[in-house]
Length: 147
Image (cartoon, rainbow, N blue to C red):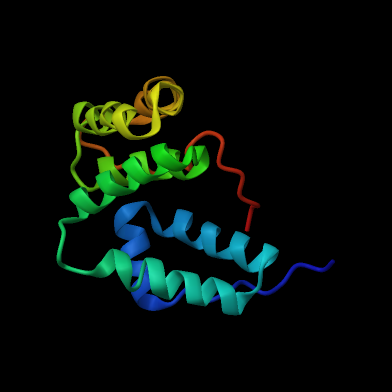
């Protein structure tokens, strides 16, 4: 199948995605999604999540991302957990705060899911996070096609 043209990420979604991760990472997510679904779905997703839900000013971005980490632990969604740990860091959460949210989930989803998430955070994602630097690289385990 010939490669499709580069999809256009909605401006508001690209702005929020760039804040949470990087412009390149957000564009890679959009491109990948447009490949396995289609551009219309990618735009719906980007507008709803990044351009809408993640752009609301009710919760701080840090709180919203820590909620996303908790939800990913509960769902045992490891690729998304990795990206939301990075986004939490980029929004000002500390490694200790992120790990505390993960540990707290033992009450709700049990020890196995919590332990898996804690190991991913401690062994795969935290070593990539450097004080004073934004997490920019796609986290380990996230399989996105190259642009």
